[in-house]
Length: 288
Image 1 (cartoon, rainbow, N blue to C red):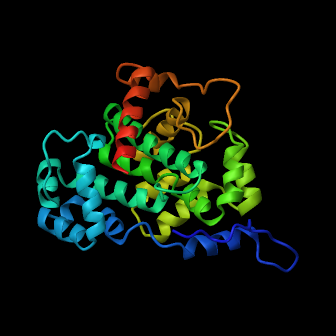
Image 2: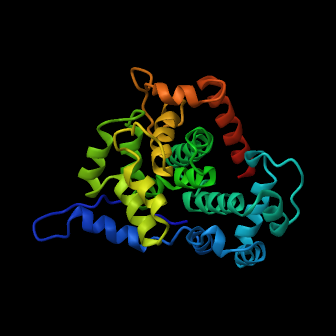
């Protein structure tokens, strides 16, 4: 995976603005995965088991990754899954879609190489997805929709790192968990923040509105009522930072405050949630 030349977009008199340069660079990136994108566009009523299996089989490397994930501790497989068709039968259409999006996301993130900042970013996204999966069950939000929204909410951050690894990596290295100034520094450097970049990419790939909404609004003020995947992701993102899965590299002077509502939703308390997420994260890293 090659990165864009590491020069921050800089506007000058008569020159293209940093925002326009950033949008142009984002548009030139290869998409997440044609198979993953097409499956996300399809509603459950529009696809059957054989159609999904055939769609995944078009990409042999992705098929292999999906099978490895299906048999990993990350998704808690209780029996060996010998093939993609078996995975769909055993796990269901929606759960296999999350396997596909996870495999595609990790490929896009370049998780087998790259900087420490890149690893922190994909770990934050995966942690957010796992937490969203848990919180969704208390909020009565579809768990696979919440998981997918969680894993994709920061895709723009990973894209900025691919394009400007040293410059954006330095910005992230200096950020603390839930850093209130990070968005401002991103906008100064790139003409947009990572949430806008995420929203732009997901809309460019024509992914469903709940996913683009989660990307665009995950740093908005926390809602008092949680009814949609995007709202679950807002809380999951904060919780991921609070339990040690921040994209920033600097230490905060104080702990991230956990919303009282979420503390009541977490099975067994925050420490057990931290253990569960860390265990599944380790399973993903073994899979890699």
